[in-house]
Image (tube, rainbow, N blue to C red):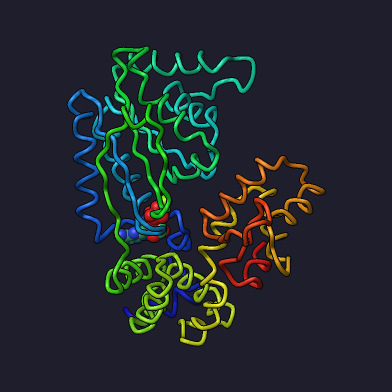
Length: 372
Ligand SMILES: Nc1ncnc2c1ncn2[C@@H]1O[C@H](COP(=O)(O)OP(=O)(O)O)[C@@H](O)[C@H]1O
Ligand SMILES: [Mg+2]
């Protein structure tokens, strides 16, 4: 076996990848390690639903790429396999951020088809959801993943409220919410109405240590590459880069891109040179993902800011209005969102210059413009 076996496979398949999708960032890994405490907490929240009650609400908090989404998907899958009395809906709020969007996903999960987009008042859709839920005797758990995106658009409170207050109109309805937030610094500003009904258990996903990142990447490499493609020392080096960036995804992306470069060079294994070469683009993976969550208008605004010598909000608005034609309020919210997502920072100008603020980029201008 060993070398000969490997050589044969490589000659036949002409690839270093045993399974390419292992390096996709939304791939659900078979081995999900170093998250036992969090998995346990999530399970505890779900248990009441298994017993015919409603699940406990949860607020899942932690920086990007700490396994929040993966942990939840694991648990949701498990519980739905285990029990017919629980229905879990996972909503990615980066993609779905309107009230109709959120409820239409809940509707689809329960009724098996999407509601009509027009001509039906929201109250009808709302009613259909909870009538069905009660008819089927199920308990509903809604995960609002990256929930902060609902709050940039000011809809967060309304959506939370509508899910959690369902039992007021439909007394037997059992509903709960798992909110997931990556933006640790952002306060979510629940309004008093929501505060009074949204009591939750908080579950923290702390950043991974260097050793934990190494373990995870090593598993990933083992699943994704043929044996012998990458040495442990190189995985260590990659783990170091990921740790430095505080982002596991940089490591996963480095594995993937180094593998592609090695293939392009017709090499049987990944060497340090390829990792270095891959680093230039891989280190930007988090920024790339973040940019892909922006609307075209938001991207245009960010480009305009990045391109300006000195960015003062008033001037930027004047320029932006010409092409995008948005109101000042809308513009201001976009700025706020870009600031929340840490693309920019804004500072008060010296007194006497009105409401205008100085806008400063938080990333390398060249990197940003390249990705935009
Ligand atoms: N403990 C872990 N074990 C294996 N893979 C992990 C682990 N934590 C995160 N990952 C991987 O890292 C990437 C980001 O994880 P994700 O669950 O999307 O993080 P978050 O939702 O916190 O941003 C995914 O590809 C996921 O498979
Ligand atoms: Mg996530």
